[in-house]
Amino acid sequence: MADTKELINALSTKHGVERRSLLPILQGIVEKENYLSKESMLEVAKVLDISAAEVYGTASFFSFLDTKERGQYVIRVCKSMTCDMKGKEEILSTIESVLKIKLGETTQDKKFSFLETNCLGLCEEGPAMLINDDYFVKLTPAKIREILDRYLRNEI
Image (cartoon, rainbow, N blue to C red; front, side, top):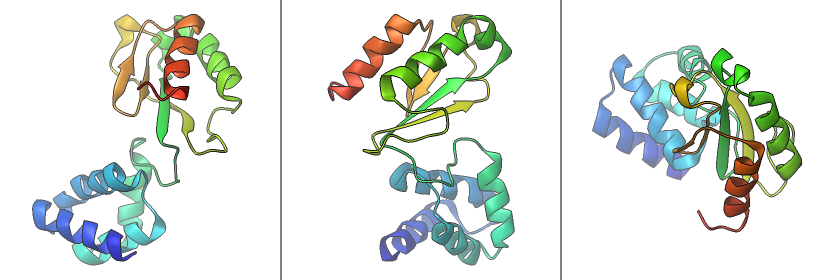
């Protein structure tokens, strides 16, 4: 927790301690710690002098602010209607088959978490997914296997 307090103090020095600083501070925590723990959200509430409910409400509203520990690589498949019409279900099935996990789960080795997310803004190139900060478009089952194989072999 000492490291988390130091991180939050550094982020609040950088972004300020006003209510408007909440989102950049939460984003900074996720960037460093991969998710928002209950303790980190309580500490942010103290530092910004706002309620813990307000911090949690903001964190749980945005899908990229994880409030559960996630794997090293977070796979987010676009769940828009366009991606759905372009074969998203096949993509989901392929990921489940390759990683041996269901949507919403994390692999036992904590390497991958598998989620759906709202529109990634790539409708013309769907189906699309994001692995951490890397976008992948025009997905097919074969392309998914190739991408995941590179991650599994630590080539990315």
